[in-house]
Image (cartoon, rainbow, N blue to C red; front, side, top):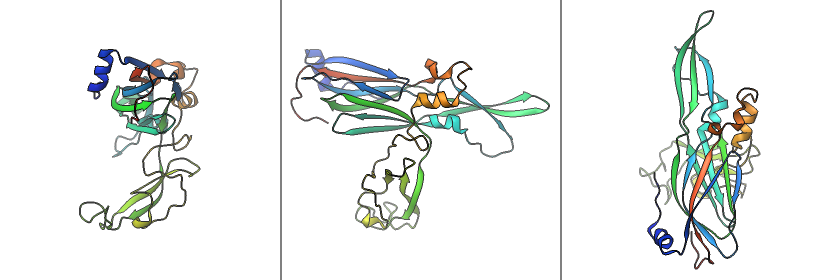
Amino acid sequence: MSWQIPPQIEQDIISGKASYQTHQVGYGGQSVLAVKPNSYIVVFGYDFSPAGGGLSVKQLINVDDQAVQCPTDLRWFGTQQVAFFNGNDFYPFVHNVPLENSVYTQQGIELDNYVLWNVNNSPIARQLYLTSTNNLTISVGLVLQGNQVQNNATPVTGSTPFALSYGGSGQLNNAELELNLAGSRNYIQPQIPTNNYGFAVINVDNSDQLYWFPDGTFGILDPMAHIQGTFDPNIDDASNQAAANYKLCLHYALYSATVPEQRG
């Protein structure tokens, strides 16, 4: 486990100033944790079991090929985003999820070689310190790709010094990545505003932090919607299988009082 109860919160729980709570969600992409009036919560960790477990995809291969890419149906599960909005701030967390494979031979008219792909949905633990006096919005989604809009040789600036960064190296770095099909919100590197770095960005809604927006092409995509649209519902009813769907458990302290000061 990579999180622990912060010492002050632990003392508040022991002394009775706060109570330890959990909130478990899953299956659908959107959830809301209600926070009652005159109270607040501090989320200090979560356990995330990614979607895709219990599903597999078979791929016919030529064993002489040097590299084989995971099929798109399962590749959606390889990057999964967990995000929170507390009415004031947005907190995204993007996870790479291992896609595992094994090779086997099947007898047909001749011997055929296959790769069987599976998702490793071992739980991922994350430390947080997220305060909310409002209902906490929770979203989980699958990400397939980003679309590079432009790249750029980063110049030497005060923020990108020669030799200590890519500044002045001449290498073409990603400068703008499309994060939804409309291209209305993109990921910008190295920083907004971009005037010092030799490229132009028009859209003011762009971000210099990497996270995806709801979109069925570049992500994020509701995990159950992908399972329903991809895996045959007449075979094992995959979308309703517990192992195929994500689970997210929040660990938080509930304070039955107004927040005494601004917290993170």
